[in-house]
Image (cartoon, rainbow, N blue to C red; front, side, top):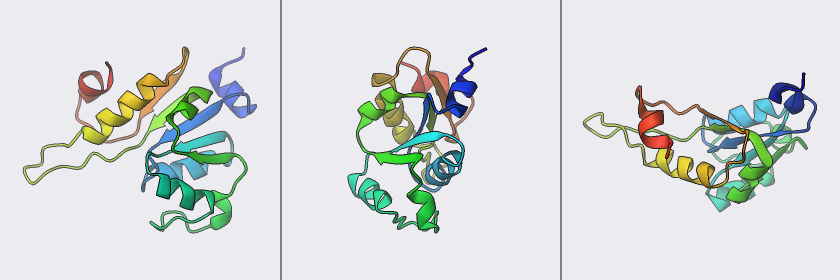
Length: 139
């Protein structure tokens, strides 16, 4: 059987991590130890720094891990099309009244949706309330 996991392990498919913050970046770095990974973030300055092996947030201190040849960084959303397994790891902050701000999640979902290819799997790592995926993320 030629499952998605087998194709990922063999390097025939890629994983995309959308959102390279305190959750997404360490996740992308860890996954790149075993798979081909594309890290996507809409912030071009963040991407340029990561390409140089610099994480100004301090989440990943080992420069070599950022320069792993299995890991690439981009702010080009079309790169998502090259990936069959997409993990969305964007912030879901709350306001003073503890209401969730789902704008990052909605924006990321729109970008992923526009670049999704048939047979792809999307996983939401972001913390959301029950039903948010169906209400906010799925068009």
